[in-house]
Length: 325
Image (cartoon, rainbow, N blue to C red):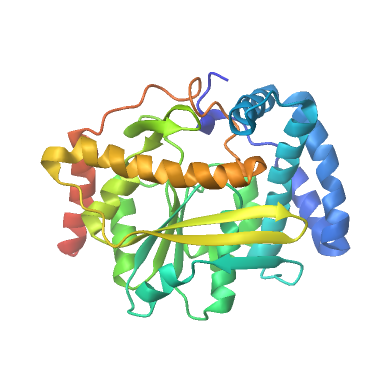
C-alpha cells in the first residue's frame, strides 16, 4: 500500500462499467444488485491493497479484529452505492427511500440567495444530495470533481445526464482557477459541494486525531472558505442498506475566519472539529467508509505544513476574480 491513493488503478474499466449500466437499465435495480457479488469476489481475490486497507480501517472503527465477511460487506456497500449512482444521476429516484435531516442548515442561506460551501467526504454516497434538486427546483448546485480520476466511471456517469456534467468544477485545474470558479458560483448563490477528507500529492495538510490515531486532512478547503467568506455546511449521505439512505446536513460555520498570526492553531482546531463530526458518522455507518488506502500511514506522506505558497494561491485566485480576469 505504498502508492498514493491517486495512483491506485481504477477497478473494472469501461467494459465492466458499461455492462453493469446495461443490466441496471434493462433489468432494474434488483437484478443489477446481483452483479455486485462477482465484483466483491474480484476485489477480495485480486485487489490486495484495497483488501488490506479495508481490514486496517475496520479494525479501528469496529474495535475488534475484522473477518473476511466484514471486508466483503465493506466492499459490497461500496459497490452498492456506485450502482445506485447510476440511478440517482439518471434522475430515477423511485427505488429509493432517502430521509433528509438538517435541511434548515441550507435553507436559511438559500432563502437569502446566499451561496455556500457544502463539505462532504468519501463516507457513504455524496450523490444522494442530488435529491435536493428534486425537492427544490431551481437549486444551483456545483460539484468540485477531479474528472481525471476514475475516468471510465466519470465517462459513464456523464452519459447518464449530460446536464450534470455541465455543473462540475474540474478539480484537475490549477489552484487559482479552482478558486475563481468556486467564487463565481457562490457569488451567484450556488451550493458548491466538495470532498474534504483526502489529501492530494504535495497538497498542504493538517494532522489531527481521527479514529484513535493521527491522520492528515487537506487544509486548502478551509483556506478557500476563509478567503471567500462564505458559510460552510457539512453533508453526509449514509447508505443504510436496501433502498435506504440518510442525507444529513449540519451547519458548521456562517463564515470561517483564519487570522494569519494564529493560522496553524486555528486551522488545526477547525479540521479537528470537522474530523470529530466525520468520526461520529463513520462509527454510525462503519461500512460506508470508501477510502480504500491506508488513511493513517502508508499512502500519505507526512502531513505537509500550511505554507505561504498555498495561502498565496488562494489569494491570487480571489484577487484575479475581483479584478475581472
